[in-house]
Length: 128
Image (cartoon, rainbow, N blue to C red):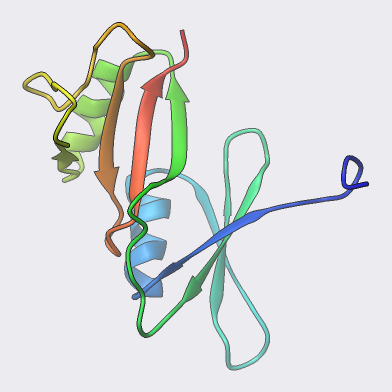
């Protein structure tokens, strides 16, 4: 039924300007302002062309789960670049992370989590 339709994901933030700067300047994604007159929203274009819709919400509550996963060839390099751009990596109970915040437990890809300015969780992980 939906195999041939277009789909996209969405999430909320509490500050569109901060989200625009973070997703555009820090993560390097294409960010476009959109929405009907008087209601500003953002469209993010992910690698590969998928779109994500970002909308403002006054009573925004950050997602407690990972909303975006970015697969990279070199997790260490990605973490170093993001750290250099002011990103702080999260450490979660039950996951042993190294000094950079990367979890390498042998049960899956190397992964590190961080948050956007609205507190939504994002991951960078090894694609190999």
